[in-house]
Image 1 (tube, chains in turn blue, cyan):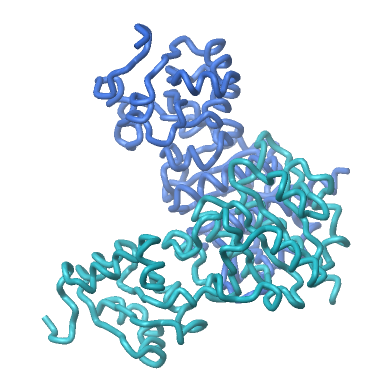
Image 2 (cartoon, one colour; image 1 turned 90 degrees about the vertical axis):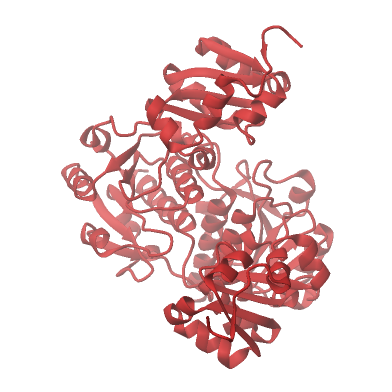
Length: 274
Length: 274
């Protein structure tokens, strides 16, 4: 056993880190648990000043030398841990985890007007309930060059480990604002000159015919997984848009629908500028 | 307590149904567990002859009268169960579940050449490992009017409850063939005149410029979540195609990528025929 290695999986520190998988501990300590080499790499690349501790097993240090090097350069407290300690802190971390301030995610602190000023593509989640879907949507928003993701009070907590994991690091690439009220979102988007479109299976416009419309700065409102867009959500939309379906499925998974509408919008906007 | 209600959550029947969440019990009994009103509705609509038993709570019977009616019309054994029994059979079933033969999914029985004859859009999963992703891809394939999903031996078991749930009933809408060898998949697709395209972040073609190509009958190969397309998988492809990304994300979730390429292909094919 190396003397500098944290090796007791029942220590107070291990319990404290593991507890961050729960919302109450995250809020109490104002901390976020980030698991796995990819997410920790993106955290260190994009949000290093918010990182408090990085934990690495010896095997992970050798397997992901870039992560170990980034951690050594940018973070004060980098700890070597035994595989047992890593597993006790987080069963899914592949030997790499970090604890950062919640401020690693723009969250409640950022000003919505500042974030949407000049934006061309924004995602609004008023009531998304599945962590995997929310993470996948944030990742798709990032991949499509979105300027921000705005999460209303009715949605799942984006600091939950399942969301963080599903974003594959995208959570640290673009502003993800949380705890917002829908009318405030709508007002800020209008003020910034974005049109607001709702993705809806019964939408009045057809996505595939809307290339010209999509070339304008656009915010997409994506509804709840089971219930779609509610009345209040439709009410803030300038229009609702449907994706043409061809098979027997009644609808797409919301993250799949998000990927399609965001990709179409990014394509229309970049084609218009070219 | 009504005399015709199954009310003992520790009965042998309850244990037998609950055990179907495990792969070995499904194979041993040649049975599939289908949970929740949406999946059971689609099972009854599209695969009624394979259904053995339907279990409904009184509340579910009132909340989903169409499901109760379909079950009464099409299935011999429809059982009223207490909420405790429903929960013991499956914690997530919302009071509705069914046990069918594994043949509800085309599976290993169907002949691949028959299934792909005349097909215009096919999805190939050589090594998908996340049940949620696989289910979401099958749902997207259905929504885009795909003719079949071909699942190779290296992929996750599509009869797992997580896959079944994520398909939202699409598993019963189109042939989903399993246990296939990649070379046999490739040979059958070529024989049927489909081009084989691999979705790949470093693909040689650009999706957004490939409308004409996509109008031809196409099979899409979608790689593993973490590793993308392997050498053997690329080797069966006529070409690899990348989705243009604009932000800092290195890649899309595979189900999001699937939604984008399948939607683009369905659009190109329908536009070409119009």
